[in-house]
Image 1 (cartoon, one colour):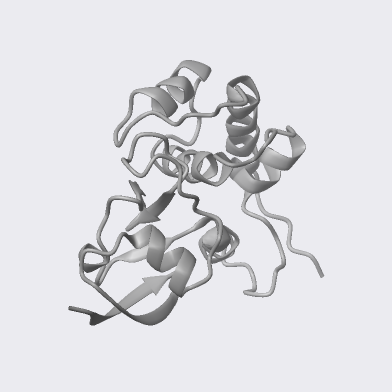
Image 2 (cartoon, rainbow, N blue to C red):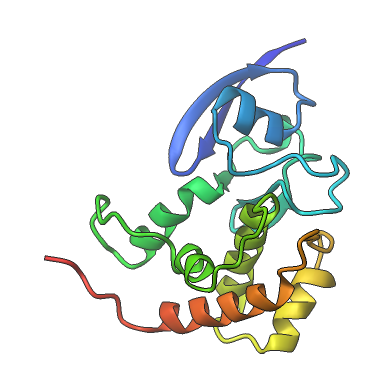
Length: 178
């Protein structure tokens, strides 16, 4: 039986009507039209559907919408607002999150299917460890729960470079544009 759920996604309260066991991924993509998180394996094993829930990475393909009430969900689309809020920049600062910019600068994506989940994992890692070593980055993407992130294109070396570039950018003072 469908019920109404009030969710906080990317800083905005959203109301959706769905079955309580509907995966959050379906709510994000089909109800809220946020296309960043992708359906990969449907078993929380590849990471393509990763989002942040109260700052922790989760696999939205297996988390039911009923488990997200009163939680703060952030998708790849919400990362710029997370950054501008953390740095107290104007809401209209028109900037990418440093992780997103590093992904562009390092030209990480090839097919790009898994990359939003990879960037979510990078943001989660950098929130806990602002200066990770290459080994710590590898560990975060392969051994840290919820499960490994899989990239069929094999962009792992570029991901390590991008995470380290983002870490440096995040430690620098933010220049505000006039």
